[in-house]
Length: 363
Ligand SMILES: *Cc1c(COP(=O)(O)O)cnc(C)c1O
Image (cartoon, rainbow, N blue to C red):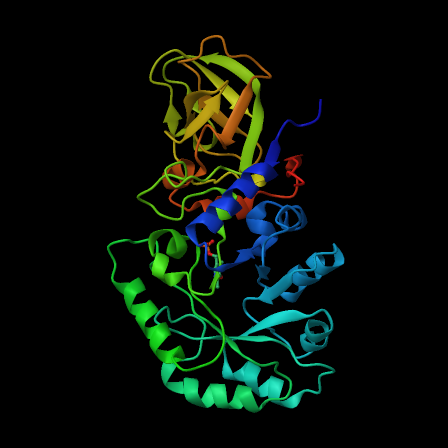
């Protein structure tokens, strides 16, 4: 037997979540965000399972080239544009679309010779204060882009929401109002909403929505479970018990020995650890499923193993199934215990974890 640590990717669940995006934003085009290896779900298989996505968004040229080399023909948008002027030739040749967020990029675009013009999304900072031109500089920037022969017309516009996951915050309404105000009178499509925006703030959907996390079946809204929102988990992280043993009251478990058995009890060892992407900071009490029953993590997470409290499962044995997150244990619950977010857990699954796929519906 090889090491039983597995990630299962359910592409039918992905397709169902895509349909959920369509129903939540019926009048918008969909730019499916597949950066960071499709949030850890496999860039190419994710993209191929979404033939009706209007575009894909990635973080860098390497990710875009992987898509093109795999035969993906839809529009591909580089969310941070280019980092080096040498990238522009490939960007133009492979018909990639660019986000332009900074004057340093604009200066390069005004200088380099390009065989054909590139399509540009102009990024506006409406309040997140990460990437984007400040609204007061917009008239000047638009004028320069309009004049630049390397840039296809019409321009398009995007901005990013900082607090869309907080239904009580007034930041989203302010960002939307700002975005509408500064792009008023400018020809060209507009995009603002991420997953949280498109679910909680329908007015932000505009011409294009940019869902990421909801496609993968985690909840973008802390107050709602994925299930509440009609989303299905795409990733299951699973393993098996590789040891089961009886410990005595007072026995210390794992590195540092800081977890001590409060009574005589059965413990189990599962083949999964931070070397697979399971969060090292997950505390005891973090839920894990053994044979579909919830048990708790105990002791520190090791590189290749975790230890589980099996006192509620006296018949558990070596080879029994272990689920770290998936359909029966929401990744959002695990993330909350580990004081992180599902995004990080998804992206953190490492290359040594074997991948199995439930194939997409071909219709
Ligand atoms: C990652 C990203 C998204 C997707 O966000 P989710 O919260 O995963 O839906 C959308 N837009 C931009 C600019 C991003 O960087």
